[in-house]
Length: 160
Image (tube, rainbow, N blue to C red):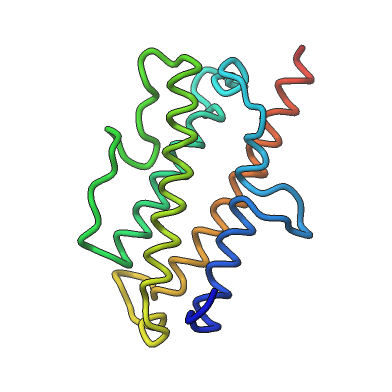
């Protein structure tokens, strides 16, 4: 990344590895979603538990929240609900593709917001956390939910 400070380059690399990249720790968030079908995305281990689709929207929403901390003028999240935005109605393959694209879009927008920072801003407090902590937190959040998604996929397979 020409012209980008080493600190920002490292943060973006961390975000990208957790989201889509090749990592020593295992599958990235986007990697866990490869080949996802609508049926698998909607499967719940119990009625009140989250499904993979819930987690897709949740991850997209929190990428947006972190971005708003970095760039408060950012546009609003395009879906209703917060934390776990509402699933679309109908929850069909086209809607799943749109929500996976939304997740990709929110990641790209967050990357842009990080790259627009000055290194001196990384230590600034924005609410309860410093800027650097929001960015690293998103990467950790992606990996946490990648693990949950892998577990949901295995639970679903064991029930078949």
